[in-house]
Image 1: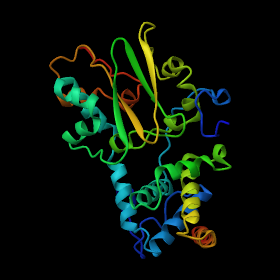
Image 2: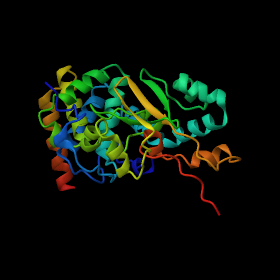
Image 3: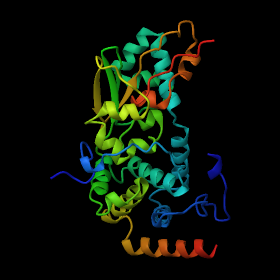
Image 4: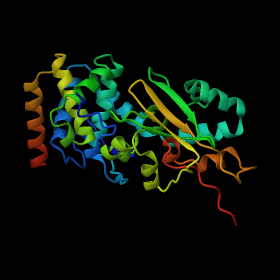
Length: 212
Length: 101
């Protein structure tokens, strides 16, 4: 992470940050410094974790989707055992958290929320967007999902049922969207480019490629 | 009784979803990482962290990573890893240094 690569005279890359707009900024830094001084953790471990999380991106999810669209065996694995599917693509989803992939079909559209907090398949997709953590999204998604999705520009047909999945600390969901028409003959990389982060949460669906 | 964190269907929170995204500040990345490292090293668990977040008196007034920072601080004190006094002292010293810097 380049913006955190600056080192200071005492070798603590986080001692003089750019923005400290919260009273909690000094408090968490105090906690980290003291924990390091007592040997409970090291600055290196903290830096490595920051870099690990910065490297997570929804693009991992887009790769899973594109592979599932082109390889029925992989799709079956993704729906049955998401961790094993990640591992096949070299995506580190190890850890105790369970991941469940839910498949959009013409009959059912899936939407993911965490009403209690912000649970999200972070190990695969990185940090959730701010709106995913907002009280408005968390409160409304389970009551009026169609209205919420409409705010994202997504209109789900009336005869398609909407299934809302409430994530927890132990089980995190991601959506396998439907492959859009007009994508026959596209490569896996081209297909992955159609899959945005919101497609993996269910507030969007992959767009059809532009026609010339 | 429904906890403050339990937002599902809570009518008073209904309103348009704000889709703007803020750039994470360094201290927010730090709060995130300190939590993960403490979990990974077995000093606390995700469930303890949830309990600490959900018990914050100012939950609704705090930003997302303020909750994480506050909960992490409460847990390291609760577990005897650090004392509240040394955290307060160090935080005050950091504030002074940043103001004069």
